[in-house]
View 1 (spheres, one colour):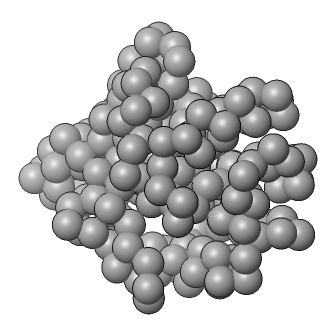
View 2: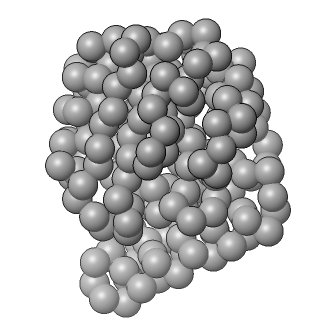
Length: 188
């Protein structure tokens, strides 16, 4: 299945980084994408970070079920819909990849070099950076037109704000789609 918006389909969402905000972004994405059959994959190089991120996501879902924010079957489906792995190859076929790793430009560039080799040429690549410009993060990207910063505000799964920051070379169509997409999935 897929989430269709305009001429773009989202068949899989990838999140790179299972530290401070990655699991919360994954929670938001699985909440809105699971009903469309779109899996969410969280990738990190550290097993401990993945275990902690999965525990955090599941705890928040359980709390949502307890408070009535989610129905029990919805909570269960969201957990099943979200995978945590060290295997970057699981990002293949992702149409949207959001990096939420350390605020280190070398690390970000290394991540995107790896991701660019795995995903389709039309996939959108984004960083959750709070202060680095797209031109810095994506300086070595092969297709800069599909790259942007999508800055979530804490807590990512509940805060309605999301900042879309295109780079000088980001295609206008990508920026417009991201703005419409984020409004469609409950962000402002």
